[in-house]
Amino acid sequence: MAIGPMQLLLILLIVVLIFGTKKLRNIGQDLGGAVRGFKDGLKESEGAAAPSPQIATRDGAVVIEGEAREKTTDDAGKSA
Image (tube, rainbow, N blue to C red; front, side, top):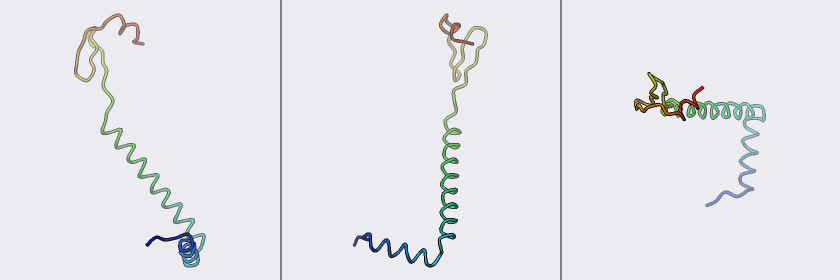
């Protein structure tokens, strides 16, 4: 049993009559703010779950995530 366009318009008309346009606008803004906050929270949790690799130099060696290798001329040219 599918809901057609006429049934949707009738439901929308009843909702507008019950709540009013101002109340519906406020509900929409609150719902949009909640969704925006949820998306921001997801972005923050993704950033915390996958930290960026730590890069450090020690006595001519480059250490990336605990692995050490000797510095080459390419590494020296790229470092600022």
